[in-house]
Length: 307
Image 1 (cartoon, helix red, strand yellow):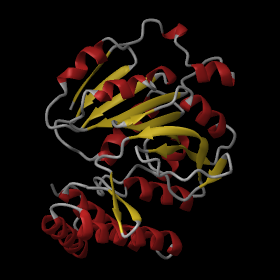
Image 2 (cartoon, rainbow, N blue to C red; image 1 turned 90 degrees about the vertical axis):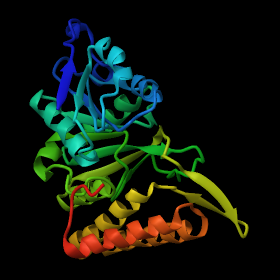
Image 3 (cartoon, helix red, strand yellow; image 1 turned 180 degrees about the vertical axis):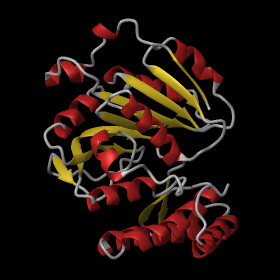
Image 4 (tube, rainbow, N blue to C red; image 1 turned 60 degrees about the vertical axis):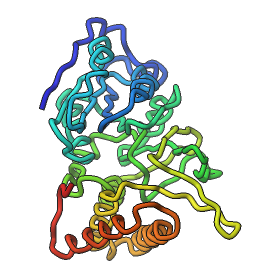
């Protein structure tokens, strides 16, 4: 693991906009973590959309090799700490690295970001105003928008949810310390869903702020029309189908008794995705092999990284 970062020589004059607007006079409030894996250069633009809203950013790099194109940006920005993991440890382990560093440094909240997400200018300020009102709020999430605008906006400004996606979340580190770390044995896929369900199980609230929109470029999302209906395809690489299958069945074992309807919803969504793979996506044979392998490893009790 390689880490480097510069101390902020102007720290006394670098309070975030949220800090002033909410009335905090001093103290560390919000750090951020962004998990990257072989990112494009657009990651710098995405980081710039929220780095001024937080006090420290941990860039946790799961790539096979250091992303040297980031070094000039990191060295010129005193808020950045770069952590290179010398290989892919998975999204859960990377989030846990960021959370631990933020806790050790005395922060109260952690903004969790994907490399492909761009934040509105008032994201942290808006979410923090909600989060600070109740000690039992574990996560406040923005509404996610993708290139096809498939998100469904509630009429209510704030809704209590069972699950939200990780990117753009403001995570209470007090809640994190009580409910535990993200499951690194899941490696990737269903990490966020498992964490939100566990947070609900531990009586922490997961809220969605429906008035604030995060731009989230969801991988290879595409759209197809068939028999007058529109279908949205994830187009995941085959290895992701392995993790989705394996981890979903573990998730069902863990929470189906307490949350039967939520797990039915997740399972039904998974089956619909499998059907869409069969109808529309490329590499069908390889993807179905990964699905079968994921189920087989679930039966054998295997976890962690496979590929």
